[in-house]
Image 1 (cartoon, one colour):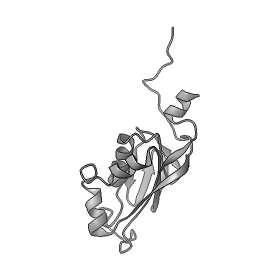
Image 2 (image 1 turned 180 degrees about the vertical axis):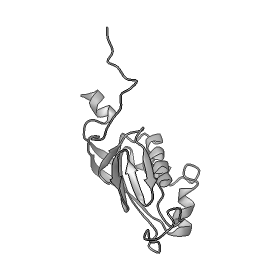
Image 3 (image 1 turned 30 degrees about the vertical axis):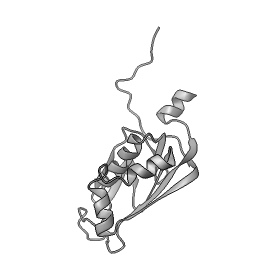
Amino acid sequence: SRLRRKIGFEEVSGRGIEIFLADSPKASRVNASVESEDLVQASDLRDLVNTLFFSEAKAIAINGKRILPHTSIDAIGDSFFLGDARISPPFLITAIGEPEELSSKIRDQTLLPNFLPRVKQRGIEFRPQRKETLTIPAFTGKMTTKFLAPETK
């Protein structure tokens, strides 16, 4: 159904972009400060995802896990959590939407003022590519519906 697809409960395919994102080759997460400017931070993932949603991405996934607008992206130590799923770098971010628009927005320093300078200065690997065909899986995490109720007539 259209509603299930719109809220993320169905697989989505289409044009979009794929972003490879990794720590600087000179960095190491072993015995490193997780605040190191050479490492990808949870805030980098959040900023990129928010920019993609702002750019009207229809669906987003990180390392094959579907992200919804309310999905938390956190770091605890050197581990990353998407909701309740643990992931680790390198990251492959896929987004379905208009490739030119998505590519333009994620390269806009006014939208990503903390991230893009670190890519240039610290060597964080950030390689976006336009793709004619992508498939993003359905959301499989936990969803709390505390404030949602079916409409009654």
